[in-house]
Length: 465
Ligand SMILES: *Cc1c(COP(=O)(O)O)cnc(C)c1O
Image 1 (cartoon, rainbow, N blue to C red):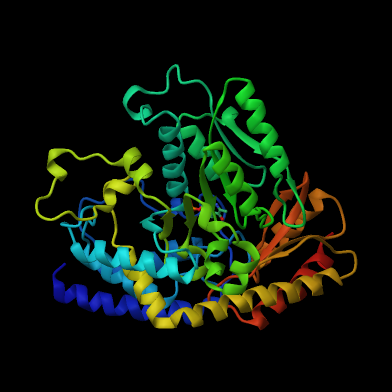
Image 2 (tube, rainbow, N blue to C red):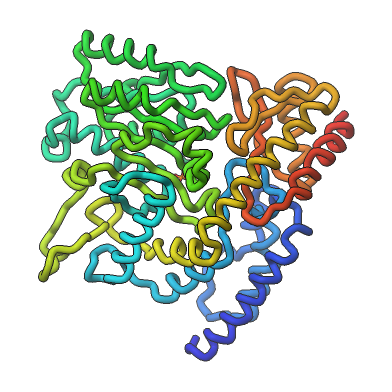
């Protein structure tokens, strides 16, 4: 393909993209294909001869698109959102086009410098004090793994990387029983082990980590000869949006000398609104590491996860490695690959720059505030639907409910709704009972899209045998 042809196809694809988004609401939200439907249509062996681009794109529409679940659909209420605002898509198209590896300052100074400024813009937008720095990672899972590795190294006097963990006893990490599975996996991969991730009960209306239980667990572990290494808190957990009380956790961590990490992967975006900060984030400035995903609620196309660090040095002491081939000469610069596990890096800051400039923080705040209000409104409608039960009230824009009947009935309703296709919801487990999650957060959803879901739920529920 030469570059003139590329320009032609690029124009065709951007027209296709606009049309896709203009008509997305006509599609069923969740893909309606069965396992194997797509793979069956692909040849078993790769072609020896080239195909024309027209044919390739036709096959893309015919074979691939029916197997796509539409995450940018305005009636996507499942999981958490993975918003991709149009300006952020355009930025990512530019990044794809430039295709630079932004591992060192030298390998694209603009990428490093825009990243530094964007992390600082977001620091200010989220009310974190000056002094916090940070880095853009691919996912919250990677940021959490980085923080857990830092807990491990700090607790072992930075000898784990060199000597391994043999003979170092049990390092212990504490969190509530609401945390995301990425915390478990970080502990597996870091060599801490599942048994040393101490999951504690929660209390209160927002299912916050019980700090009395935390104190008791740390004391018991010390008495047993274990070594406490860190605490992981959450603002807006995946199940029902659990949010920890940060000041109490920070105080215990300070007293015990423990490293702290806060997982705000979803809810962090809402902290650009001062009222939500006042509600959820007192004490946040005491945390050592904080992760949130602009690629969820805020609207920066996946992937884009920000990790803020109160002091970057412990993480650098944990992850930095500098073989000869990565050394650069000249004045000291920031090389962000030293802050993270992967070496190679995309230029992820560009989509944040485009996003924030195209909407302004006020535009982004308005969307988030609307989502929270609409979630509260539809929650009330469902509460008043005969026999339906609100299991957990909205925490920001997430609540959970049950229809009349047992757990099996909940799953049957979710499946029937997703087969119907007008809306997309997923289930969760809360206090051992199956619940249906409802979150409002798609970037361009409207109040009508949200409120319509109540009618769909009632109608599909009525049609269940
Ligand atoms: C989505 C989510 C994660 C995982 O985020 P990735 O970026 O997909 O790794 C972790 N924690 C919470 C609370 C989440 O909502």
